[in-house]
Length: 142
Image 1 (cartoon, one colour):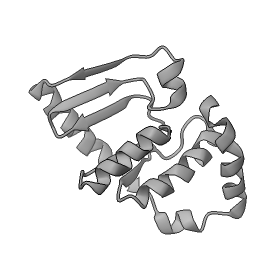
Image 2: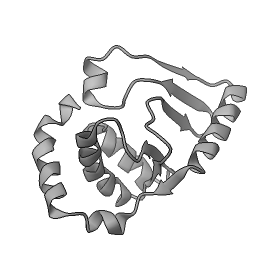
Image 3: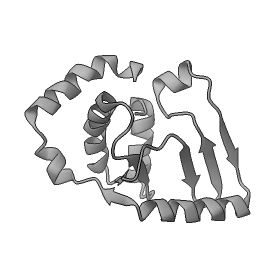
Image 4: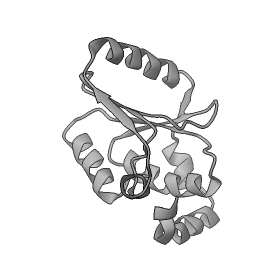
């Protein structure tokens, strides 16, 4: 999960009226990360950010499309550990042909998603809430 600075920037953009949709795998390859991630997704929903769970399988590639003008695609996560320690790569660009292809890919991916259910999130078991809080101090290791 992105750190607090990035999450705040995303929330601030949403408050300015920017339409933000985050697609994340419903189940990653790290179960504890899923629990920790869900803690933050509930907070983002309250900021008017649309969250979609991608159902078919885990996603490792990352894609960001900004105003249908700029794209960033690659393997680097938007989190503390990746920004500081990991050796991954992203590509940024403005090529209109690539952007149209990526927009089509995003729409195809959305068809395989389900909405994050805020009501169910609020009703999640108390033990998950405890685990979330226990994971917060070690979140940089995920």
